[in-house]
Image 1 (spheres, rainbow, N blue to C red):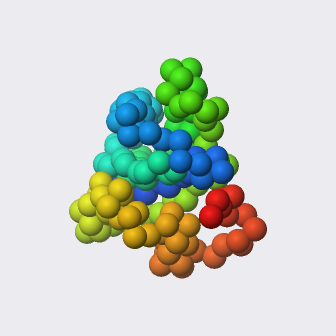
Image 2: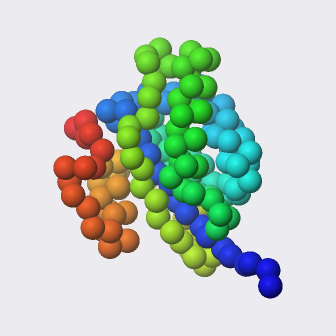
Image 3: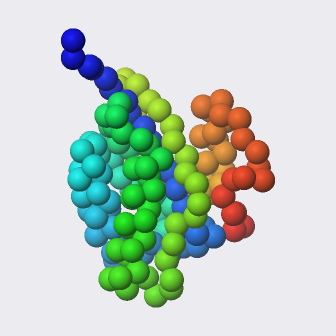
Length: 152
């Protein structure tokens, strides 16, 4: 018998120190590069967007995919891409850790809309508040000591 699955995950991670280093002049290049990484790993990119200090990626993953390995590869390769192409005026790196949230097919349209409208969304909501809301609405227990290094 064949295996059938539908695993939809939203991945969220931030720039080290939550610095505002992702510039609009090159963010599309970054997103295209990350898209290539995801496709190269045989996963399906559904949406990608963010603001200056963090990104959201919605991906359909195969059951054989190790999510932490995928995120590690995305962060490592994109970090190298940014620095080797000197896209940032500062030494760029991602913060340790990430958030991963699962969704059903029925929620996909609203999550894609949410991700694609990040810039508008963050005019009224800080990333810290957004992230805590995501953890709480998904009933994920967390220890504040191990969340991102917040810059307020």
